[in-house]
Amino acid sequence: MTMRKRPSIRGFAAALISLTMTAACATAQTSPAQESAPEPVSSISTAPIAFGPDAPFATEIYNFFVQDEVFTPTACRTVFTGSSSIRFWFDLDDDFPGLNALNRGFGGSEITHVIGYFDFLLTKHQPREIIFYAGENDLNAGASPEDVAERFSVFMDMKNERIGDSPVYFLSIKPSFARVSELGAQTEANALIKAAAETRDDLIFVDIAAPMMDGDTPKRIFISDQLHMNLAGYEIWTETLGPLLSDPNRPKRSGC
Image 1 (spheres, rainbow, N blue to C red):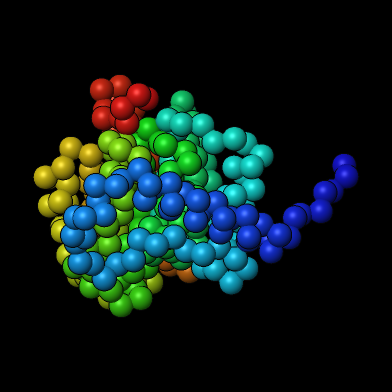
Image 2: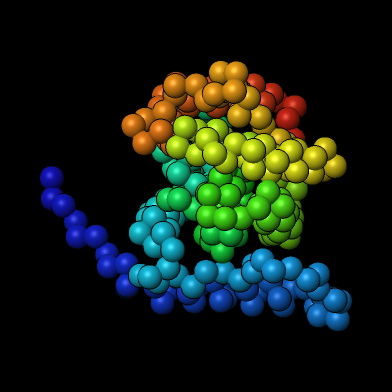
């Protein structure tokens, strides 16, 4: 079998930045009424991350771009996005047959990275539903539970603007032995987002943390780094999320 040379990541940088700027301009042109309206004050930037060799998680984002060039994106798929716990969910198709699942998890990403790459990850796919796992790395990097909730609120606002009523399933921040000292902050952040879900029709809070615990201690369901899950961990996630996604009457994006 002849191996084809992989295109240089630098060769795509200019094209990706151009696509991002074009999308941003199009959004601005279709919302003239917003020009005179005061914008809410937020410390969280929604500007797209300028893609290039030195951009965060550039190799993985480049890989997504190539996949979308080879396989033209189609609307109404179930898109899983967020950090490495999504990235390492290798058997999504087996765990969720019939959903045409698309994995868009990357590296040790934080919610702000998902926001910065929103159009690459989600807008072009117009998903039927979004399965979201991020926030754990935000806390580990020093963000407060309130910061996590605010960042996720910004993500939801972007979702409304660019995708519409696609429901978002927020997988609660998971416990692990590697970050056992952060259990309190994780619980607080989960509680804040669970409260937000109770006020929205397009947000479903999925508690995967409780079934991962054995009393006050995480279960032995991790690989050697004691942070990422083994198959037993993903079985818990599948058993918890599966019934929600197999319900034919679950909420879906309009038109899907």
